Image (cartoon, rainbow, N blue to C red; front, side):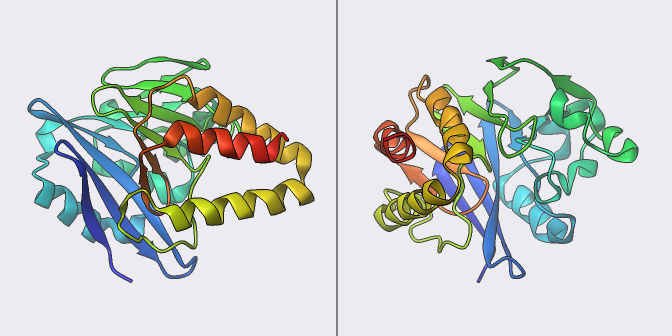
Length: 229
């Protein structure tokens, strides 16, 4: 299993590393906006060498990294936050409070509330995976960066970016089993999917695995129907 850099649009890339212990991929994303760049999530610390190499190949220079946003506080997403000045790093306040004292020093900005506009992106809070988990939306590319609220762990990359019919079907089966085991928890998860329908999403970029393109609203509606028949 290889680490990869994959273009999503002409201004957005996925950096994907493979974690053998989990048999799963871990994703971060780079957006070019004018002469500046925006980063979403930063992998595990042990993947720093490839992560740095990937940023260089994309053309990111340290002084051009304007904003670094984190979907949530877990180590596979904030593992390289210290590569960037704390003034660039943003995390939801509800997750900031759950960090240890040292990790809090890495974040110069927090944001609060259930949703709104940040510099460069929009956000909605999805308090399920963690207290301060969020999804980000880029209105230019119509990509939704959903973190681990909905993700494809233990899943092959396939085309990396595409319809990924098999991936969608497998996730629907997984959700059906989850509903049978934990109906209340699954219903709570579904609340976040309903929130995401407010955005005109064309790409669904998750924290792990392939990136879905096309019929995103329909896919979310199918998941909601499974969890709340």
